[in-house]
Image 1 (cartoon, rainbow, N blue to C red):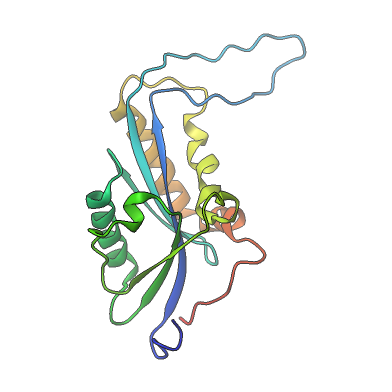
Image 2: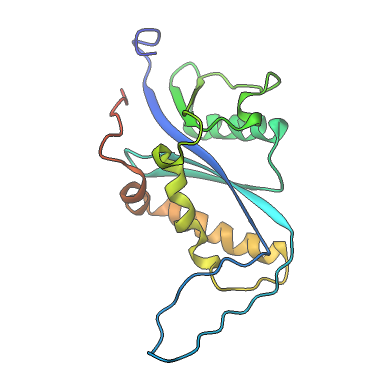
Length: 184
C-alpha cells in the first residue's frame, strides 16, 4: 500500500461492531464481607449496535449507534467514517476488521480512500477495537433501562466521553506490537 500511495498519508485504523440492548450487563461489585448484593434485572430482548472505529496509535475514535448490522448500513457507516477522517485522494485509511458477512459482501460500497484488511478467523484477541467494549459498557453495567432510547442516550454520552479522552482509548487499544504505519 505504501508503494501504491507513496505521496499520500496512510493511517491504520481498526473497526468492530458490538450489540447492546435491554438485556442487562451484570458485573461484580465491591461490597462488605457477608453483604448480599442485588443487581436489578428486567431482561427484554431489544437491541441496537455500536460501531466503533479506533486509531490505536493516537487513541482517536469514531462511534456510531445504529439499529442493526447489514451491508447497506455498513456501507453508509464507512462513508460517514471516510468523511470524518478525510479519507480520499489526500489520505488513505487501511481498516482492520473481522470477517463478518457484511464486511465482505459483494454489494458493499467502499468509499474512496478506504481499504479493508481482514483478520484471520476466530482471532478477536488481536483486534484492538474489541478492547473498547468493556469501556463502552461501563455506564450500562448493573442498570435497567426503561427503553432503547434511554439506553442510547447513556451510550451516546459514553461514546462522546471516550472520543474526548483518546489517552484512555490508546491505553486499551495500542498493543505493543501494533505497527507504526502512519505517514501523516
